[in-house]
Length: 222
Ligand code: SAM
Image (tube, rainbow, N blue to C red; front, top):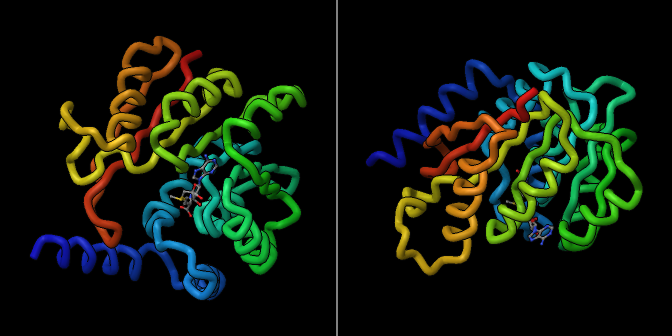
């Protein structure tokens, strides 16, 4: 079946382009042992995030939705030694697991996990007068995606890259009758981006080990 081919092709891609990484394998095992849901990005998506960090020479990254820090580690590894990644997570157990994983990966010195609702933490960042970020990855509770985008724009400069995961949801996002708040959140996210002259964006449908979904990638215009 289709899904099986997607997964096998993902394996093929990973075998050739993404060398086996003992640390990342251990991170996924630690997440499983800690009972975290396996809703992290796939290896090829993690690598894509890392390539975006490099392409944009990002030194400051904001992530909304840490889980066990799998995507965090992919991105943090591409940061310069004086770079910084702030990742926001609601669940203290997820954050605790992520902190241990970040230490294992040796990126705990440049990554800070802040626990609480992302909306609270974003307001706090603003109070602190945080500098703009070079890349912002939105991957938490989807109903809040429009609010996260507004915050992302406040923390941006021309050239900031904004990425959102799960923007296709097995095609459910074209169902305007959907009562699923995640679908509604993602649809409102598209509408907001469509009406936002500061952003230029596209979305790419993805298939693979994580099923049928999509990545939205945008850049803040100069
Ligand atoms: N980016 C991670 C990765 O690829 O490894 C996956 C993140 S997972 C899809 C979403 C995370 O967002 C979960 O850990 C969940 O606890 C967290 N979350 C849910 N609602 C949140 C909220 N209101 N504020 C902050 N984090 C939230």
